Amino acid sequence: MKKLLAICIGSLFLTTLSGCAPGDVIDRFSTSDTAEIQDIHPESTRVYMDEIRGTLQDFNGNQLTILSDSSNYIFDVSQATLECQDGMITGDAISVIYEGQLNSTDTGAVRALKVADDYHETTELEEKTTRGQVQSLTANSITVKSKGGKTVTFPVTGTEQYYQSGLKAGVWVYLHYKGEFGSAHADDPNLLDGSHMKIFSVSDIDPLKVPDPTPTPDSAKNKDQEKQKENTLRAVIRNIQTNVLQVSAENSSDTLNLDISKIPCYFSGGIESGSHVNITYTGDFDGSSLEGITILGITGEIPENLSDRSTGFTISGDIAASTANTITLLTYDGMYVTCNTENASNVSTGGLLSGSSVKITFNPADSRQSNIYQALKIEDL
Image (cartoon, rainbow, N blue to C red; front, side, top):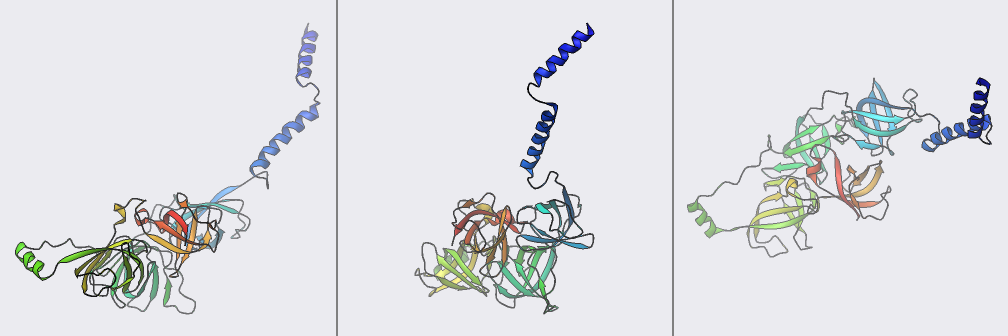
């Protein structure tokens, strides 16, 4: 009986493997497993993933330098996603998640997958304040000179700025920022690198506080109205060069050059081209010139009050580098500005390749704490 049962079980097993020798079955399963591995990672049957933690030393748009355990590591991040909450700020604690195995400080054999905030780090970069004399101002940069003779160019894309007494070269301003200064210029130790900081505000008073309009007594109001009436002109920013703000009246192509050296100015979202300002003035504006009017003050739009569809803040330049979710522009005033492109409407024709000239629309309210700007729209210049 036992022999008969053994024969039946053996017959059933052979029927299940009909036509397949034991070697064929092993080969079949081995081949399948290998194929699945090769489909995921064609170049290797085993992949190592790890992270390295440290502080950001430099970033050029597709390559970063991180200091970890007293050694510098240079990573190609052109295929990685940048997911740091505060952006890429010098001195900030970050983690680089990579694929492969590091050989000392040689990163050539690994592939960076993600750059993120170092969640192991419990301390954050402190907000600091510095003071200096304005040397020049553009839409994306301000250059100041300290009392000790150090000169720094800071990024001010989308940065809140208030000049109570106007702006011109030589005016002392306060800057609130996060980050660390980069290395001094090789040929001039008095030239410091501030390009990878986050500037929160610039003002000729500290703390920055824009005064509320002072109510005018009725008796004085009537007398003032007899003398001169205040008017408001809505205009679009075209450019700025230190104390000269170029604007065009809304629905006009004529450029007006406003001397703001003695005019109170408040720009909540920076002085970016395409954004609107309200110009308070007295006199009669003829629509094309400043003759016959006196400018009393200039106020820019408040980004928090704008919808994505109505914002006009733009950054223009040539694409210098990119990662999996960002592009870095070299702007026409010489600054490198990184923008996140994940949720942007892209109508450009250059494929976001290096060298392409583009204009990016953004809302400064989305990047108050970060030096990476959230692109809303990308288009050709």
